[in-house]
Amino acid sequence: MPTVAIIGPELYPIPPIRGGAVELFIEQTAARLQRWRPVVIGPSDPELPDHEVRSGVEYFRIPLGGWRGWLYRRYRQYFPLYDQQVAKILRQVQPDLLHVHNRPLLVLSLQKSRDLEKIPIILHMHNLYNSLGRRERPDLATSIPLAGFIGCSRFVVDREKSRLARDTAAHFVVYNGVDAGAFLTSWNHPEPRQKLRQQFHLDDDEPTILFVGKLRESKGVHILLAAMEKVWARFPQTVLVLVGGTEFGLGRTDRETPFLKDLRRQIERARGRVVLTGFIPPARIPEVYLLGDVFVAPSQIEEGLGMVFLEAAAAGLPAIATRQGGIPEVVRDGETGLMLDKKDDDRELADKILALVWHQEQRKKMGRQGREWVKENFSWEKIAQRQEEVYEEIVSSKQ
Image (cartoon, rainbow, N blue to C red):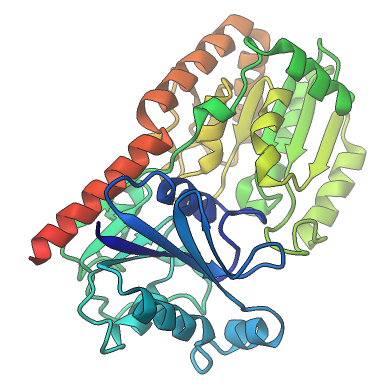
């Protein structure tokens, strides 16, 4: 059985005990590979061993805390500590294929290692070049010869064909996935829903608008709050629940950013009720969707593909979303949710929220259609199978 080394970014551990969509993708797909032996490489964490086999996947975790992490983040060009340790593990493992997530500079570093240069490399981007930090971006003039480029949406592939993927032999779309079985729906599980809502002091007759994600300006949380002011003027019993912190990672999840401080002041002046849950551990994320009746995520940036839209659909919630990035590839306007024509128009957003709040049967129909849509097209089993097909196509082309 051939071996693939799956290499995550240096930010968060895998499995994603600190959060992270990329880390979740790696964990879920690696455990479901059937024809390839997966070896996963990522950063260490105090709660995880540096080496273990879990769910049939061998994990190597690289210490990058304290002074090592500081040096790496500040002077990566001169102290490529993560890159060097990844290369050391790869020499030990001797994989047949390298699958690097979201780190084009790591690809360049590995390509310079003479004993690794013959191993085909895939670069898998979960967002765009512009979304990378300045110490994570190669110069646009830099050539990155790749055996394959994977985008998490058609949008990412199309955008990067002339940038990160311009010197790539083959391009592929591998969508994010979701375990629909881990998400309960309100119509099939009324008792767990009622119990959870009681924990957050939500009454049964209060329509609840749910947001799940980082509390950042780029996620459009301020637009949502402005829209809710208009919703409360016409339907005052509606509640807004904001699930998430400002960041992922150890000790970073509830960092008080200037945006969050301003958001708290806006919430204090709001005419309706807002529930701030703070960071919710990834293991509990499936249950929080039981809090909502309508899922809203008015992203203000071109994201690769928001995992939250698949999760909301799996939980049977209709979504209201902007036409940004890869989102229209997973939210079907009028079938599984409603799309906004303008990303920052709080009046349009309020009207669409009210349309679903007032029309209960419509939102239930959309919720059911969304759940079936993701079960048929975005199960982790299907995504892992697609990933193996990409591996095999790349390796066969090299023979």
